[in-house]
Length: 396
Image 1 (spheres, rainbow, N blue to C red):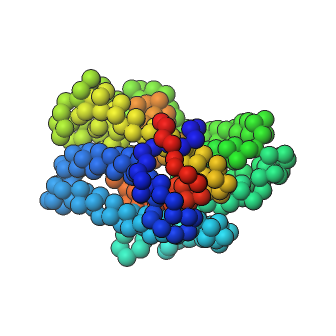
Image 2 (spheres, rainbow, N blue to C red):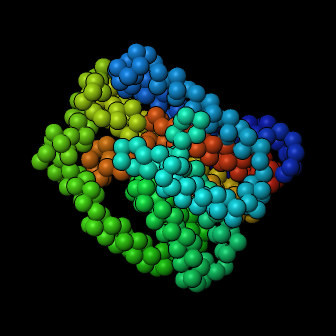
Image 3 (cartoon, rainbow, N blue to C red):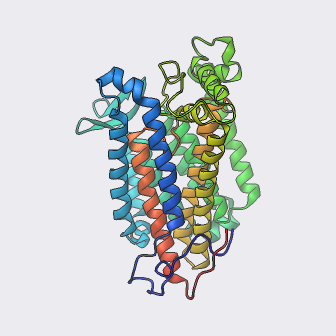
């Protein structure tokens, strides 16, 4: 990673000291997040007009909701930019306990709300809140704290890696009980990534990863529901009107897009052919309407945001802020991994996971938590830049 990255302004890099002065906004991150969110807003509107009109008679219902969710997430992000990350580090254990409380509460009858056969939601003020989205963030805050506190043990001993992986496995069990295989996969992989960045030995990481993959494979093999999903993934055209319906419709949508798409708003597959067109399969509608050009732009934006987060992690590490560096790295790994999985599912390269496209898909809890996490990333950048003395250089 580069020593310092992005576009710096005199205000951004002014010498204000670590605790006072102007907030050092990372405009590169802000620009990327706004660009992805705006593209998502456009595509959610296009993908949901028909279904919203059928459900409520209001064609722009999901546009209005998406705007509201972005505002709520933006408000949370603003608050978090004002919270010193030292406080998050001190509260890592209580936050972890809160994560477990959320994941257990969602499994309690009467508290957890069942949607489409999965008990993933807690009903608050008439709205469904997906507990796993916030819980994953809280768990990763603890993992970053552990990596910063136990760096020596993590680098030299197998037990240093086994302890946090045991914790992640326990969280994964609770997620699988909902069931939420996709969230468990992303959390486990992101936790692995943070621990590897923190210095865990490669041979230990590989050994644990092989064990984890074997465990996830066994879970799939022992679950009839997941085996049916795997079969639909391997050959969706064997049953295109039942188990393979969603994937075949997604592939048709992507194929119709060709180089430059059929035109914004002109998708045919979103007209009640492609299930979850405005949520998990938004990318397929984007590919149909904007073509390969839109796909390249979208993938480029996510790669740039993930790289930016990792570069901020490097900036924090150079400033001696280990916990902050692991927080930023966690965001970069998570945003890149979840976008990769969602796009892979839409293109038939990965089995269906039920994961949204970050910052783009319609999804209440996912969108709010993701935007809020951007606030933490911006705070890390501010603290790292404040710790750095002298003018910053800019590299890609």
